[in-house]
Amino acid sequence: MIYHGIRFSLKPGVTDEEVAAGLAAMRAASAQMTTVRSYVIGRDFGGEYDFGAVSVLETLDDYEQMMNHPAHLEVDRLGLPLIDKFVSFDITDDADPDLGAKIADVHRRRYAGNPDVADLVADLGEYSGSGAPGTQA
Figure 1 (cartoon, rainbow, N blue to C red):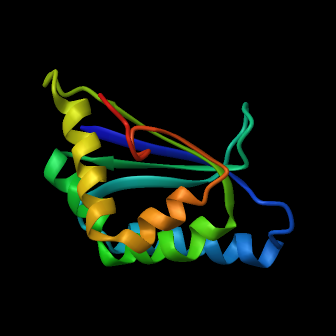
Figure 2: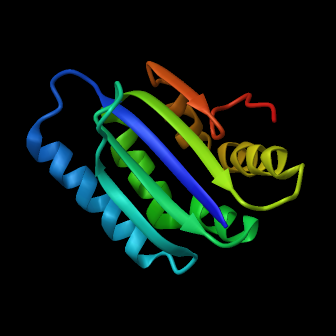
């Protein structure tokens, strides 16, 4: 299993309506992706981030399908402009020692295939973690 998590803080001036619409879009996208076994999206407590999400996937192929699903890409296109700080992380019980590098490769291919999303990521105030461009596992 792969537990893909994100945490993010919003830019100043983002309205409550924009937040509600963004979270609703995230939930709707997660609900339509058949590779996502379960998910949680909501407020992030105990850190410096405003919101977070965790998606549970069974395989690396499921992970790649989720990352490239049209609904996920649309959420990126709508939501990333509202975000200041972003971190992604992955927790797994998979014994493959190369899984981290394989996850980084999924993101590299995703950005190469979707340069508009890569540009939005490049405009974030801060981005670190497993999905960040240039990540080496």
